[in-house]
Image 1 (cartoon, rainbow over the protein chains, first blue to last red):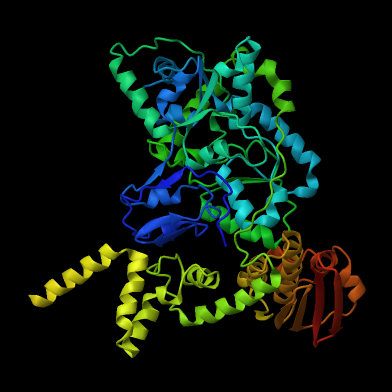
Image 2 (cartoon, rainbow over the protein chains, first blue to last red):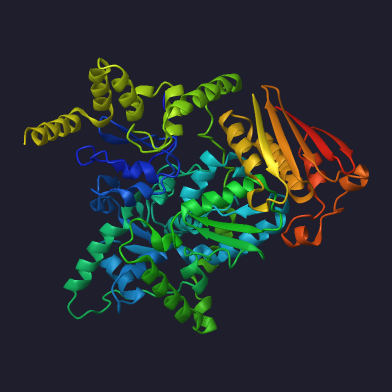
Length: 461
Length: 136
């Protein structure tokens, strides 16, 4: 069966660096990786862009593709759209205003912190809850990796997704609109999102539940961090050369952290972070009816966006810093708090906040046709009986059951299993040559050659 | 295709395992997500019923291309008045069972709501058999 291409993945495997060590394959929550010819390969329709493989790779062979920074200069008006976690990546003593100012110094003409739209979303989400009681518990669409996880692993739960755009999308809409309203030609506006993770990039390049591409480019958090820090260091007197007002609300600052949504939406709401924790909960939600829970905030990363794979600062220190910032904002005077640039655009944002229904696309099915799927299931059970059940990954598949499924789908051979191989070779010496050929196909010719050489050397000593 | 699971009365910590296994199988067989949800919720309610009320039981699920048939049979106290037991909120669950968050009296009515056909046979102090069918 041909691999159908469903969406853009920002995660790229550099074949020249990859050593085929299986670390990425074993941590992938959707079994989206295989080792073929000694290199990791991504199964595009299974990947949900969570970035766990990026964290696990010991040789940094997995990259997160970004746009060239120089691309911002293709536009006369260059908007930096960034999440509030960016501001908390920097060393102690650098106020948000200075980060804002430095973004302008490195080349952006406008800057906008995405969580400015969180306050509107908060109100709207609570209204949505009242109007969709039959779909409880409603699930947040904030984390793009979770939306994709539900599509592929929990298709029956797609109708629980709350169809409201996360702050990141509405912020992009607002940022463009307010410049157009100032008489600026749309062609001259370039919006660049500074991302803490791979999933947001996938959401930008191939959005789910909406058609328009809202953003012109993506810049990774770690690369802008270096750029901004270099600029701050070269600024000897350490002053904000371009003063910008900081008028995010405390709710906005905390929105992307764990409990940022759940404490503001619904009465009985849960916040779950970490993709394995989310999977465990969604398994349960599929079995039982839980209409008593209003709202689920589900985030792929531990400590939510503070734990984004592209962040520089430690996630717990980031959380601490963001909480301090929220506390300061909470103690501001009411007039200052009302001074939100969003106030004039409330209606525009509300009109554009809806998302299209999210369609399921299960990756668990063995075949489209149910009777064929039943045959394959029986074959798979038979194959599994002959596999050792160690889930060692040496066959290039993450588990014995994944290998059995690949065999049934004609994508692998039973001889890929080194235990099956060893057994065959033990029974029949002629099988040895075939066994080596098979291992070469998984691990690449070089690795087998090297191993045999060291084996010979050791024997000759 | 037939699958069979044993269920132990009183084993609340493992309640739901049989329905989880069936859910996985139905996903792999490309059954419509809505039908999976209904079937799994019905089976889960039935499984919890066995755990909460009976001494032991069996869940047999037969999957065909046009329907899913399940037979949940237990050795247990049986149901004296089935009509009454079918009503929302009616429960004979013990205080201990209720304290664990079960026994809200929605089990059988939820099973009925989530199946296309349902039949109950019960003999007091012998056991209960519930059969459900969901069409694909």
